[in-house]
Image 1 (cartoon, rainbow, N blue to C red):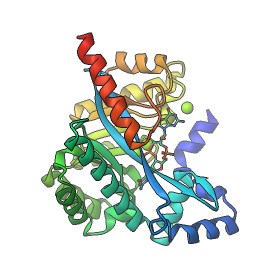
Image 2 (cartoon, rainbow, N blue to C red; image 1 turned 90 degrees about the horizontal axis):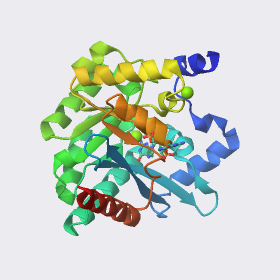
Image 3 (cartoon, rainbow, N blue to C red; image 1 turned 180 degrees about the vertical axis):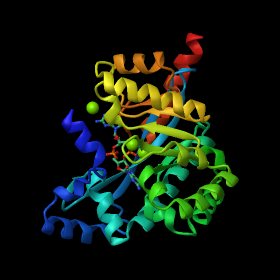
Length: 285
Ligand code: C2E
Ligand code: MG
Ligand code: MG
Ligand code: MG
């Protein structure tokens, strides 16, 4: 398994590296005006609870449609916004947009489940980020326990002291914290135990070849057991098949997210999706 080992020991794959220098410069410049030109939008992907069968939350994901450059994938443009600093403004826009969407769903009585927002390391390392989040929650009227922030391992490992201060502030507010792409970084048990996180999201890389791949099955089983021993909710990302879902249920994974359940969708569709699911659940029981 040289392929997997190589990937797992290197830094997380940065799709922006595939772009040539000219294209990177062009897109980076275009990103400076995306907010003024209204080129960003959010889509939402649900997570299913394997215990209750209900929708446990939705993750907000950025989309960029540029009239000049077409649809650009987040794995390509997020790294560029981290280089040119636009991630601070764009990240805040994404957070506000997601909270606004939830506020709309709540007031219309459509759904009231946690919303997950991805946070870049640059945002987290800004000392004022907890205040930014607190302000957005106050402005949109969203209770802190309806918000989940998804962080990656690398920022927590590279800046343990700084990130730990912010994390404690979030927990005091009541905001939930997830580690995204778990297993791809340099996770260690001791840091997991020290950080006030509430959820682990197992990276799709370990889910892809389940249930057939015995290495991935062993790794996933271990992550689930470890997460549970620390009192964390364990989520599998990128679940695409019924047999993956069944295996994860048999192995006590708490929640799944992936195309098997649903692809990310616009705000209007997700509210309908969640309603239809909870209706089916009520009538089935
Ligand atoms: P992520 O946070 O790990 O999000 C999961 C990604 O996997 C999403 O890609 C989602 O569309 C995709 N996905 C979900 N289920 C499946 C599946 O069954 N099969 C496959 N092949 N893919 C699946 P997306 O939306 O392209 O986002 C990619 C990454 O970009 C995210 O990974 C996240 O790291 C970053 N990102 C997206 N939105 C934001 C944002 O608002 N802020 C920040 N800082 N990063 C973001
Ligand atoms: Mg995420
Ligand atoms: Mg992920
Ligand atoms: Mg694999």
